[in-house]
Image 1 (cartoon, rainbow over the protein chains, first blue to last red):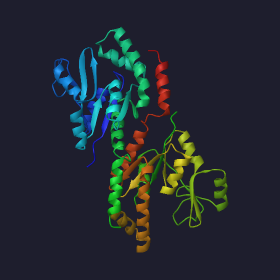
Image 2: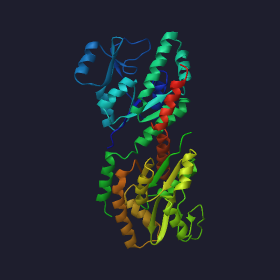
Image 3: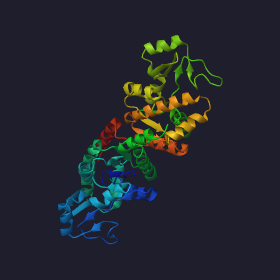
Image 4: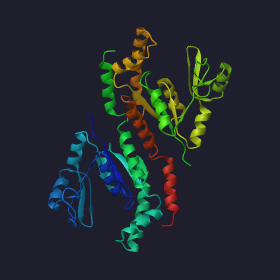
Length: 203
Length: 203
């Protein structure tokens, strides 16, 4: 049986990677990986859907057992992608998508080099600023800091296989779906099994 | 402006590369390259559509001027892909598809390495035999020879980027269309222009 493929979707905050991944899972059979965190659930967040909420000891134990594909500590809270459920889905032939930041993606390049890396770009920096501002949750200074960070992050694009400009959501998701479909037609190891099958056939 | 991409579709005779390319050009904006040949037109063939029919001297002159992306001589007749119209389309931002045999594709790897190589596979060797036999134009011995050749050709698959199994035509063309779309989202040289553009924007 074919193994599933792992797609890593990342890009600057505000580029729309979350919305794209959500729409992607709605429009295709791909599994969305759920992250694990030690931070407290916010109102409306559901354990096992938004995140797996775990105590710090549980997280660190998993970390010691090499149980994460990537992880980070932000403002004293741990976040990570548990390895087991992802590898299980792939083994069963299901594709998986991870929505993570650039630092996380760089870790996946080490822990699962066969992953396919998709960078989500905003149509322009001006549009990115608009989107971040529209959230209304941040000060001018915080927005400026985010913009500076986004510009630095864009330089990581050469570590990615694909880049998708998120102007119109449906068009961006169409592109990601095309990438998933195309990657399943890549000449890869399992092609050789096919050739062997052909050779064994009676001509 | 973005340059167009060159797609090379090849595979064993009978796998259906011609039908796939025809359907691809009907369903998308891709240009189909027209080959040049010194052989006589058959009834119904149109100059400039089926082939460019030229006298031998014209062909050889073009060959001397490095005017082909690939060429071959089969049973005393020359066949080749004229370079100029393909490069012109690409320069104007239009994608081009070439339908050629494996030997031709191997030449394109030299003359235009940026091309994207798609191998069309039959669903099985038994199905390939059925398709060749259905044409009704060949003897049992000729069919056996074709089958032997097809099996050898399949070994070239590792020189290709993608392989598409042509079981059901629409599904195969869907896959090729996804490949074309995905390749336009590849991180390539023009991504750096985009980053420069972002950097020049007022934050």
